[in-house]
Structures are given as structure tokens and as C-alpha cells.
Image (cartoon, rainbow, N blue to C red; front, top):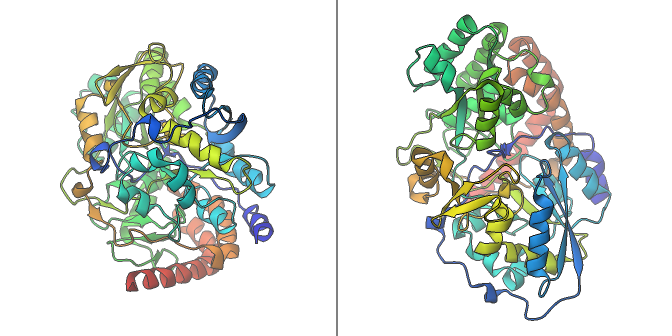
Length: 516
């Protein structure tokens, strides 16, 4: 089974999102918060090793770039563990653009790696089906009390796969915040009032084109972060959302009704309007014309030549803010159309990021012991924010102040949990309030598919084929680069058969789930 699936999967080099993500464009659409976690973290002694163990080195693969001060942080972590866990950390950072291919090759080749970043939008269900990951229920029960206690019951239960904990969920809220970064200095220079709606945003974009010819009005990422696809996060009429296969522009859910819809059967008018609107923005020269060739759209934005960018997480990341200020003396503000009306947002309590234990790991128990160690407050602070007094300093119990850019924020990639997480005080009270809102379960409507996990094994061939075809068309359609009608017809001609088989299998499994 492993060999077959790895061959099939190699047909598809998945395009990676950044949910996650703040600086994590990988985003997390749900988990839990300190307020939702039912128990406090046990003392360090609850899972501490009573005596020094034999030395082991854990190889960990996570996305992003290696921070400047990372080696100093690892040295401090290893020093703290030296008399007990006796763990050395070999952390390998993989560029976002290479993440899907590199992790797939690593797993299919049986390379010696212990812990690896995973996500449903990456290739998680396929890799689980191929038995590349170790079930964690028993290991967590024995070695991971802090891992469990720092996450709510909703977070643990909603992120099981076929009833098993197949990876440690990473997140701190029940819903992924989304915003548009807007150049505040340009908005004020042009006399534009605060942006309150999508219509306001586009009017501003056209004004930038007219009045600031040296600035490109818009830029967007790829896949689920393309300009058209991004609009579903503020869709409160039909609540269109991706299936568990991720973003493909074809299969989707809406109305929280448990059905799998197929754009090849009938174009949803709302969904299709987002695609045609993106095309207009591109042909009107508002969209960055080389958007498909950009590897990291945030780096382009940092240069100060773009007015608007869509991204994950409420507020403005400090590295973006400082870079734009340094580049052109500009200022960035975050604009969101997120509704704080109780029940307006639907969530299935799933997270978008995980850390998986590989089935080939020779250090399974120690890997979980390390993650448990990292789930204790003082150790979490170290791995999440860097060396206290050098990279950051605490502000109360749930906030922190960054002192430099030597250790940018990336706990989403390996240690993130809601109980120990801190908010950057630079985000401001309004943004922190939004983040806290998303951490309260009662603020949301529960998705009818909460707890459902799609077993992709019966249609593994079709998924591999579909993803390969998807990558030829989706990003170009979502960012308006190609004519929607003719391109979508080509997409349909190549993918409709496999899409229909996937849809039918998924609907069959959903029906069985709902019947229970």
C-alpha cells in the first residue's frame, strides 16, 4: 500500500498555502483557547523523567526559514533537557515553496526523521492512508499529559482521523483570522476614510492605480489564498468552504448542509462571481501582473510597492510593518470583514496545522516526551518566542513584547498550543480582542461535519490525478490571470471524471457519518 500510494502521490506536487499561517500562511481554522481548555497544565514533575536517559537526536522537519537566533534557542533547550530527557534537536527548515515535494519524498523514501509538519491542505490524509504516521493515543496517554492538558477536549476530538489521534494538533483558536493588509499612509494621503467593506477596499485599489502609478494596488498568494478563493472567509450568506481535500475550485460545501457540491455540475453564482471579479481586477491592471511567478508574496509587499495584500491572522505582523517602514517609510493596517455576531461563523473545530510522528522513527517515546516538555510554560516560551531578555520579554501572563527580529514567530510549525500561547502586545487591544473572541467555542455555530474525517484511500488514484490537474488551473483562475470561461472548460474537460468519483465517495462517507 505504501509503495503504491507514494508512486501515485508523486504525480502531484502540491502547491503549499500558507495558512497557516500569520507569518504562518498555513492557517488554522480552528482549535481552542486558554479559556476553552478545561484543565490547567500539570506541573513539570507530572511528566518529567526522574533520571537521565541515554542521549538521542530527534530530527524534526518544519516549514520556513531558519531564524538567526535559532541555534542559541536550541542550545538553551538542550541544556535544560541535558539531565533528564537528554535530547539533541536536529531541526530542518524547508522553504514553503518546496514543502509539499520535500516532505512527500522524505516520507516515501523512508528517510530517518522523527517529527514532521503536516496539514490537511498539504497531504495529511493521503499520508495517513499510506501508514506513514504513528497513531498517538497510547503514546500520549503514557508520555504526553501536558500535550493533552494544554488542548481542549473539542480540539483533541475534532482533529482525530478515523477515531485516532494521528498527529498533535497545533493552534490557539476555533477560527482562522483573515485580513487585508492596507497601506495606511497611502489611504490617508489620498483622503480615503477607514475601509469598512469589500466595496470600499476595491474603490481604494482603483484610486491607488489612478493617483499612485508607481504602486501596484493588489497582490495575492496562491491556492486557498488566491484573490477569489480568499473571499469565502467573509461569506456569511452561503458559508462556502473547502472540503477536507483542501482548495481546488471545484468541490466544496455550503449552507452547512452536509452536501458536497461540484462546480463542474453547476457553477455556484457566488463562487463564480469571485472568479470573474478577480479577472476584472487583473485585466484592469490592479492585480500584480506577475502574481503567478511570485514565490513569497510577502517579500514583494515588504518592498513597499504594493498597496493591498490578503493574509492570515488578525493584525499586522511586526516584520511586515518594520520592513515597509524601512523600505518606503510606509505604514500598514489590517482590515477585516470578520463578523463578531455570535453564531455568524461556522466552525468544525479542526486545525490546519499538525506535527506528526513518523512510523519509521526509532525514538517514538522520546519524541512525545520532548513535545510534552515543550508543552510546559517555561519551555514553550523558549521555543515559541526565543530567549527571554534577548528576543522578547513577558507582558503579563498572556502577552509579550518583541525585542528584535532574531527569532520571528513560528510556534504554529511545531509547538503551538492554546493554553501557553501569548499575544504580541504590538497587535493592539482591538486585534487581541478579536483573537480572544475566536477562542471561545460558544461564539460559533458548529459545523454539521464536526468529527468527520474523509478516508481518501478508496479514491487515492483519482485524488492524485485531480491534484495534478488542479495545479495547472486553480491559481491562474483564482488570481484572474486567465479567461475564466475558456480556462474553466479546459479544467472541466480534464478533471470532471475524477472529480465526480471523489465527490461520490466523499458524499457516501458523509452520509454514513451523519446517519450515526
